[in-house]
Every structure is written in C-alpha cells, then in structure tokens.
Length: 180
Image (cartoon, rainbow, N blue to C red; front, side):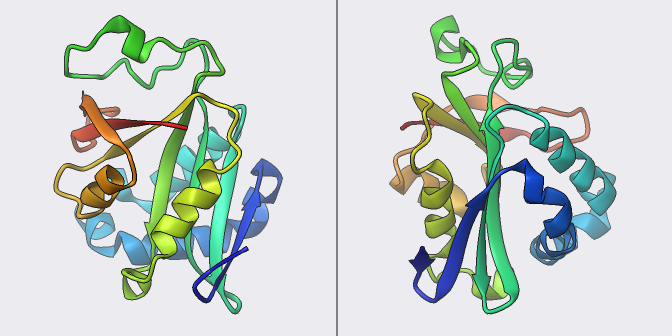
C-alpha cells in the first residue's frame, strides 16, 4: 500500500522491538522541543508507554517509509472493558458515551510524521491504514487543543467528546471519537 511516495505497512506487537530505533528516532524528531522541555516527553517514558500499549489486545502499528527511512507511524489498541482511558475525563458526558465492553473502541495512541515530511498526506494515509478493517464500532484519540492536526481530525470525521488529562504531568487533551 502506498500514499503518494511512501510505503505503508501495518503490523502487530511482534515487530515492535525490531522497529524500536526507527520509532524512537521519528518520535525524537517530531517532539524535539517538547523532549527538551518536559520529563513527560522523555524518550524513556515514551518507550515505556509504547511497550505498555503493545501488551494490550488489538495492538496495531502502521508505519510509513520513503526508501529505508521511516517518516511516520500510527499505533493503537482496543480498549478493555475496564479501561482507564476515560477515568481522567474532565468533562461531564453521558455514561453511555464512555461505556467500554472490550470490543467497542479502538484507541489511537500515536500518529506522528517527521516535521520535514508533514503536509504531504502521510498523516492521513497512516490514519486510514491504522483504522482500516478495524472490528471495533468506533475509535478514540487524545490531541492537544492547540495542535494543528486537531483541525485535520475534525475534517476526517472526529468529534470532541470532552477534555482529558491522562497523567498528572501530562497536558490536557481533547478526547475525540469517530465512528468506524
């Protein structure tokens, strides 16, 4: 599968260790300023979060490469029935909106493209590759309200459910959902 001139690949957790160097390199490139400014964004904490996600059911990773260089990726997993995902929601919502049964919702945890590769459709291609053929009813993600990609998510059919702060030292995010 390709998007413009990038090769897309979709895999599961079995490839995570083999891709670690590339994944951390893309992350470090995409988040360079934030890594320097906050421990929350450190590469060690980031990798710890990723390896935790990889243990969850439905973990999927979509990567984009130009030649041998990884230019971006997206990943996520299926929310469990007892998922902590919604515990830090700061906005009152209908309880049915956050009810999880272990099969209802796919959580998109990361979608990133190297800064010098943005604006070429790679993010949208990764988004679509990650969500294609998902068995869940809907997807969710967290995005900083000031992140320019938030507007793209709205154009791609996402809607804001409320605000969420998943870690005490993390930013406050918009929690978004989209029917699949």
